[in-house]
Image (tube, rainbow, N blue to C red; front, side, top):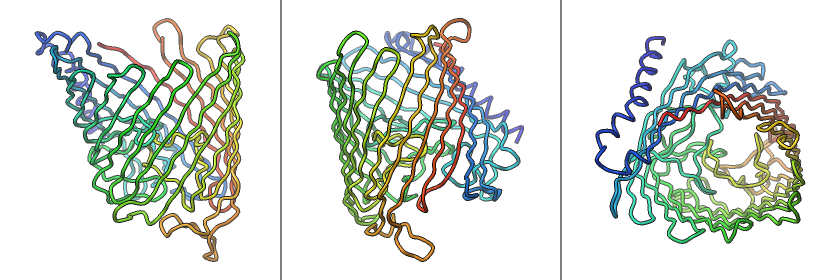
Length: 441
């Protein structure tokens, strides 16, 4: 594995290092070079998860642990001049295993720090390499290839060592001031722990789904700096149609005091061959809070009115609900949840770059009595689970270096504790994430 690691690192260096030389070949096309960027993000990622009831561990003791280093190189060219401009985006990434605590690497689970073999053993290294061609005409940009969409119905996740990506066609338009419209059709995805850029689709709660594509369309409109709206829809072919509506607002009361809030709503119905069974779900969340100088406090409520889990693409960020937090989504059928969150920005106290967050959420009334076969959860006697409850407490401290040779380096500590009845896990987890971005071009 050592030789393979050296070859992968060398390949990464070639791809990242070749960025400037590739664009110099197009030096005559003004704008292609001037607007280009080449960045490298160094990410050191430590993750441990302690299942308090001893479940979901390849070693049988309920404990998963991994420490890894990720290097994420991205090149984005500008566009050639003219009515129609062309460009290219490319990336090369490598994940390196540093330690998995004598095999406590999470196995085949949502732990997902490093790829594992059929025996649950983590690989020493893996790579992700891809790119996309892009065209700009007027105020529209079309990309074809490996893309990273970001919207409430399809959003590439970046909560693990390496980011998730999709393969297909995307388009964005910004012709109208304050309005951003986007759409796409994607035929493959790549999980954070995979080198395969053409994987089939998978969802978080139902697992793999044999769908040929997912398409989405929608937009975000900022009426002014204090009020915005979003409206999106998506179709995972033969599985679901999803619809999203949301808004966010702030209301300044003075220079130091402001109110803020948001509202998010999803509707999901089965589609085509009903690969995930029949369902007709709607789930919503609302939040209101107050910001006073360096402090902010918010209260949110979330409710799933459907008979099934509200599902979304695996390891993606496409669940814009207030109570979808570090581990729990609070999205089980009929579940109602409340959350209180507190944030502190230490700049006002003479420590710029240091921030603190803590939150506590509690969910009740989860009921699988009418769930379909795909999402059904049963007790040991085979009866549907009812009257299920859970809570989660998160704490996060983050510091971003403000000056000097390590400027923009960030250090983040995240801790989560969850406790639940039969339908979910009791666990404690800790994540330590150190990131150092470098702008080469």
